[in-house]
Length: 152
Image (cartoon, rainbow, N blue to C red; front, side, top):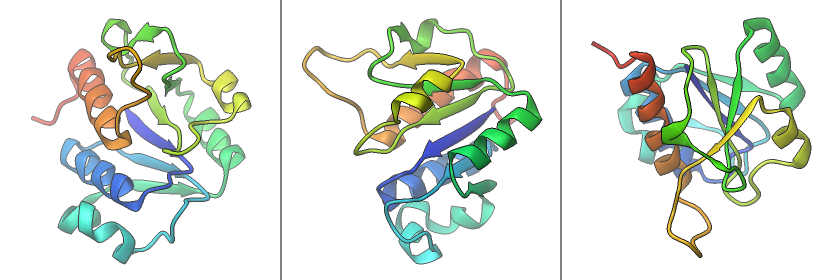
């Protein structure tokens, strides 16, 4: 199981996700460019001292990330407010990569189309989306529960 972030805009969200994934022993893929300077200082507040424990890989762009994915034979599962299938009814697999779009724009059409699966978190009508870090935590928790990959 991995978490991938497509061009994240908010350092605090990335820091929170890195902290969550460090605690759950889940690697993170960061698909650049980021909407902020990627540095210890920009991530430190949300990531606190967990940042040094995070297993993350920075990818220069979408194509670099795809080359990585194809070498690992992993399935890309996109979390999207435009998807129809609910995350809690979806069958996760151990090698899935949970992909999240940027806070401001989501993912472009070609990225959406490239995803192997598209799932959503059901919400109250007329609400656009949850916070990125909250969405990542909710869906990652369900994926880890289904696949028995929570740390012991």
